[in-house]
Amino acid sequence: MTTAQKLSFDVQLSDHARTAAEREAVLANPGFGQHFTDHMISIDYTEALGWHNAQLMPYGPLSLDPATAVFHYAQELFEGLKAYRTSGDTIATFRPYANAARFNKSCVRMAMPELPEEVFVEALELLVQTDKDWVPTTEGHSLYLRPFIIATQVGLGVNYPSRSYRFMVIASPAASYFSGGIKPVSVWLSTDYTRAAPGGTGAAKCGGNYAAAFVATRQAVEEGCDQVVWLDSAEHRYVEEMGGMNLFFVYGDKLLTPALTGTLLPGITRDSILTLAADLGLEAEEGRLSIEEWQAGCESGELTEVFACGTAAVVTPVGSVKGADRAWTVGDGTAGPVTMRVRDELVGIQYGTRPDPHSWLHKIG
Ligand code: PLP
Image (cartoon, rainbow, N blue to C red; front, side, top):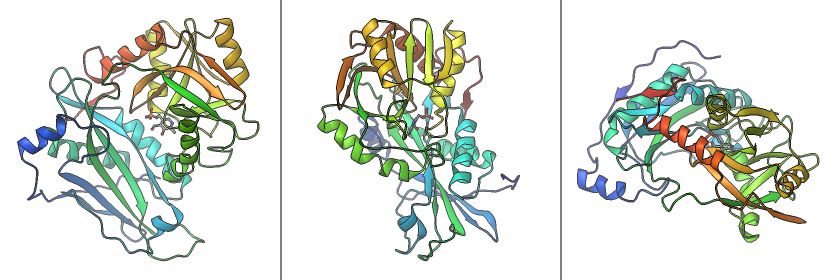
């Protein structure tokens, strides 16, 4: 349960903050997840004190005992969202309370303490305000925010969850995912591996899900594909999601996305598109789709487009599909008009160039 605990942050500014010239050199070519801003957030939790020791401090390495629980039993999870410099030259994040709520759901699944949503959002605000000069001005670029929590109890006992934790937020300037223009991805249907099974951790954003996925991503690359599509664990037939994005199937003016069965991540972009669909005059449905239906739909022309969605790349067309015993093209293999409409609408809201009828932007400065 989240408590209404009031925390005040101790602020310690960096003596080694980069100069404007050093910062501009990074922002000219930020890539993704390679460079970090000058500060970070840290908040501790113990059973005795609850959440305490909230700090904004200089970005830097952590010193942890090798027997710290997170290194052994992977009791850890994270979130990902972005701060945008909007057209009105304000800085805003997109639906941060949705990330706070998903963070807490993940915490419940991983037997970790929930963090009050307002503390989660306040931590983001404080870090972004302090490092606001790191929010890129280049069109399509953003400041990626990475909140995470780790188990910090020292000891190898495996029978109980950790009794202490640390919540942190770091920030990293990010280039547009599509700096060279929109490029459809090719996907590999993973039938050798399973990402998540009923009762497992598929709906939680815990690092273990990603660690277990790398082998399938490597297989996808060996098969000449960009990304993995995960299928249900029982039959390896029904589509769940991609490695870091949810999927939408376009039938003319109708969207279909796999239902949240507990084995896929409830994406905030996915949820936003389900809401936006009505604004765009599209029907949207959550349901189930087999790989046979996907292939047959593309071959008959009834299934016109497929796109993936998530914070990192917003909306990405899927151009071709390959599995152990099948391969096909989606439409003509290029980005379709519905995909581009959904993408333009969402990006327009995030960067403040289109109206925000659902009040999704959370202004920070
Ligand atoms: N699915 C997985 C496995 C992810 O890691 C992500 C990205 O966070 C998503 C879906 C998309 O979620 P969101 O739209 O909240 O970024």
